[in-house]
Structure formats: structure tokens, C-alpha cells
Image (cartoon, rainbow, N blue to C red; front, top):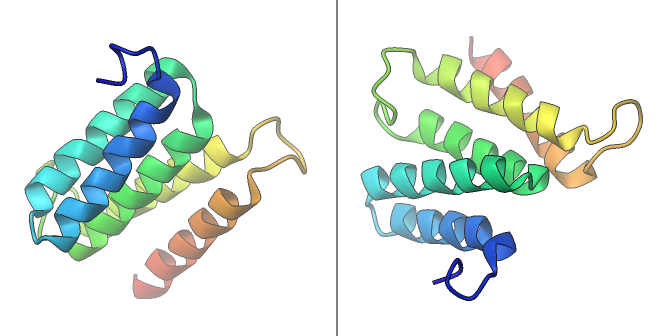
Amino acid sequence: MCRQVNLVEVEADILLELAKLRHAQNDGGESVRLAWEALVIAERSGYVLQGADANLWLGELALTLPSPEGRGESAREMAMFHAREALRLATCDGGEYRYKVAYEEAERMLERVKDEL
């Protein structure tokens, strides 16, 4: 629908919120699928903050769902990967310029994963 009315800038956000709803409804597989779709759209459209949010949610899912992505990596490795990607995306222009909330959330996830190793 968003593509039909030319609102692609909100499509990833909608999919990510729907992914969170599906998780709350105990549909982890659909939550992962929707989060990946949100990430692909964010990457394709260049909306880095949405990409950071999608990576953070995928990292959270990696830690809370049994083998959510089925790639053979441990949950911690997947969470670490997504947290690092979120951190990279939240550093918009390098240096001190950051998307503060996403950056700090990614840092917290990295610390949480490191603490569990």
C-alpha cells in the first residue's frame, strides 16, 4: 500500500511495528520475516535510521527467539552483528554526529551481548 501511494519513507517503520506486534502475538517467525523486509526496504531507500532500528529489533529477536535466522551462528553472534550494523548506521556522518537514541541503544545491546559471553 505504501508503494502505491508513494509513501515509501514510512513503509519500513510500519513493517517494523508490525514485526513487534507479531512478536507480542507469539509469532516469532513472522516477526523475523517482517523485520528483514523492513531492513531491506530501509537499505534500498537509504533511510539509515530505519535500518538501525530494524537491525536493533533483529538483534533483540536473535537473543529472544530460538535460532531465529537459521544461519548456524549463535544467537549472540547474530545479536552482535545486528548491534554493530545499527551502530554503524546510527553514525551518520562520522565523528560526533550520531542518531543519539539508536546509537546508545546499539551500544547497550553490544554491552549486553559482551557481558553474556
